[in-house]
Image (cartoon, rainbow, N blue to C red; front, top):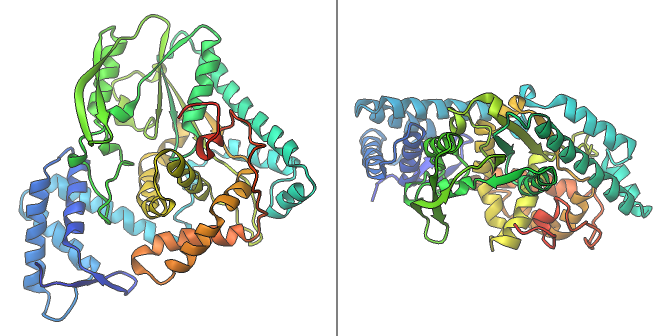
Length: 446
């Protein structure tokens, strides 16, 4: 056991020293450059701890910067230059995020689909649901059903437009990517676009990239020791690219099968061949990530990005954050379909968001079209289902230095809920609504 017991965080708080976090950080950097030797990461971590024990005066605690400097030193001295570079780049990125922490959840301005955003804002204003006060007024005046009908129609129009764009390029498009951050509504949108294309005689073949996960034992972990399924490096990207290339060349491939119960991958499990007039459809967090399809010609790809681009101004002059909407969606979906406690979802969201900002958001402006999945009526529903939870978390994590990120999110949502009316009965939500993907009770199987 290390003689080091605590570490000083950047905000000055003192927390327990956990050597496993050093191991996880080194392994994550190794995975970023296609290395997956956990034993080597553990050995290097042990060297870092030994070096800290030699250099940190007895009775004192090392700070985060000192530990990170030691990690870089050990990596370089052991000849792991590529891993050290990945670690340094990740460290620099985290530093930039901290420098603008007040806006850390906002999409970088260069990656905002402004034309679509103004369209959504115009729609919200014309339907008088663009502020929390206006939304509450619509609810109190009994206009909720009209708002639901109009919002669902706007979403359907987006989906229809996307399907028509694909049909216009039917002679060249070979694969359709429906991408977007967690809980943006990719699955429902994939189903709906598939239905529309099928009515035009196109047979869609789904490639489930979840089956390309590496074995759980090879997964990177985050700073809290949680397995990180959100990073592109959790997927065998070279194999996805190769399988797609072979399929488009007319070859039969055997798709791996990932057993989520055991956390293991069964290679070459399911045969697959692409026939004439068939289009591959991929619903993936990382559909825009270049490495997934680096050998596929650009003209063969159709890329759709989906996000709940809600335009709801709050009393403090700020707008409801899209990431908070998706957090609540995921809480409800995980509880309904995965027996996953909402608290766990909140505590895991830090790496979900981190991966989005690094691996999804930067590619927004490379897409062919954008779909808005936000419904102005969803927040009142979420308040009824999760309002008490957020109030509890805002109080519970207020003074916990290890849960600062969770507290900031919980406190922000809790304050937002205080100015939004609650709607208990969700039976007015259509069975085929994208919202049913998260609250359950829908017509589609997820």
